[in-house]
Length: 245
Image 1 (cartoon, rainbow, N blue to C red):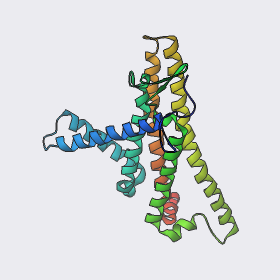
Image 2 (image 1 turned 180 degrees about the vertical axis):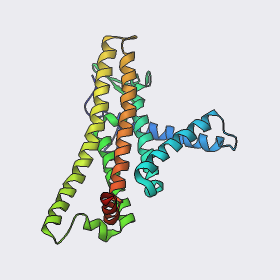
Image 3 (image 1 turned 45 degrees about the horizontal axis):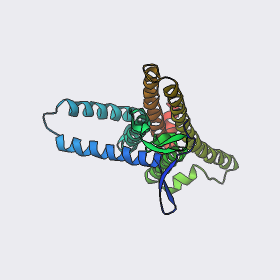
Image 4 (image 1 turned 90 degrees about the vertical axis):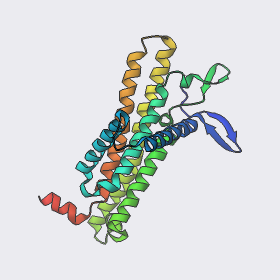
C-alpha cells in the first residue's frame, strides 16, 4: 500500500526527513556524479558516451531554439535541468529493489526512498520554482515597467485582462504540480498493487509503461516551462508583429 503522503524516516529537530526528500538527494547526487564524470571524460576525439550526450544536448537545444528563438540561450538551462531532474526522480521508483529497502513498521514497510515526484510537496515546489524563474526572466528581459504593464493598466478593460492573467499564472502552478504528482503517484499505486499480487513477469509491462510515463511527464513539465518562459519574455511589440504576419 503506497502512502499518499511522504513518510518520515528520521527527524532533525522538528524537521522530518522523508523518503521523498532522501530520493531528492539521491537524484541530485546522481546528476552531480554524471556532470563530474562527463567533465573528466571530455575529449576532442569523443567516445560513444560523449557522442551520445552531445547528440542529446544538441537535440534539446534545437528544440528550445525552435520555440524560444533568440531567447534559447537563456531558457535552455532551465528546460534541461527540469527535464533531467524530473526524469530521474520519476524513474527512481522503477529501480529494482530500491523501494524494497526500508523500515518495517507494524504491518507495512516504509521505504528509505520513494520517487520524489510522487510527493505533492515536491511537485508543488518544482512548479513554484518554474513560476518564479519564469517571472524572474520576464523582469530581466522586459524590464519591470513592461512586466507590470502586462497585469496592471489604467484602462479598465486591460486591467480586467491583467487580472485574468494573474489568475492564469496561479492555475499554471496548480496544473503543473497536480499533473506530475497525479501521474507518478498513480503509477506507484498500480505498481505496488501488481507487485503484491504477482511477483514475476506480470509486472514487467507495467514497468515498461511507467518508464514511458516518467519520460513523457518530465518532457511535458519541461516543455510547458519553456513555453511559459518564451511567452513571458516576449515583448508586446514583438508579439504584435508576429500576430500581424
